[in-house]
Image (cartoon, rainbow, N blue to C red; front, side, top):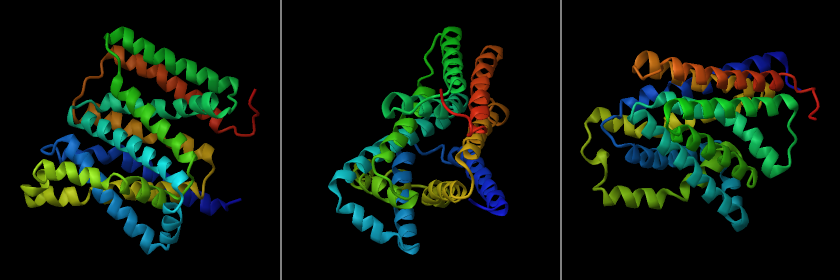
Length: 293
């Protein structure tokens, strides 16, 4: 059991991690002249380099070599790499196309989808309260579809890809730094090939400011993950589950208050239903002593 001081430190790390994830759209907006596809490719390449250097500096390279020799697990890392890059591409497209409100919905839904996938695919048991949370979230999404006449595909792809990513990573356990090195490393040849085919991408002709931001995409990817891992080692998962709603809340506020995205009464009402589902989920998460029924 961790000490109270360690838990307090873990909460600080968690707030910083989810706070950065929530505010990073400001960073990606600065790369608005770079297409979201190229942003994803650069993020993949420089993220892989950053994680590999981190694994080397923190003495985790032997684990990388060990897993490289395990062909059974390598296929899971290749699949998880495809899933996380799909998530990045859709998220960056949402930022580029001024649809951060919808992307925030995806990250509100993600923890609820995680528990549902755990029940359906891993045989985990849900309490009545969590079943209620999943059901209420479903009603919120259905209400949004009926009210707007459109399917919130960005939200659903973001929640689905990240939820599936978590399931796949369970099949090949590894530290965040090692796992990220492997899953992104598999895709580097593809990313570099596409960038070469596109004439080097935006980096070939970018201004010094844009070029420096592109080079920082690796750190923008790795730093929040490092803070998240440091938090997860110090605080209970129930606390971490509660903190994770900070990121979509900040994204929603940015989209509406800073970038002027539409958030009328109809959307607000549907979001209120989904917030209720998140509240039910958080109540259950903060009462881990209760048994599932």
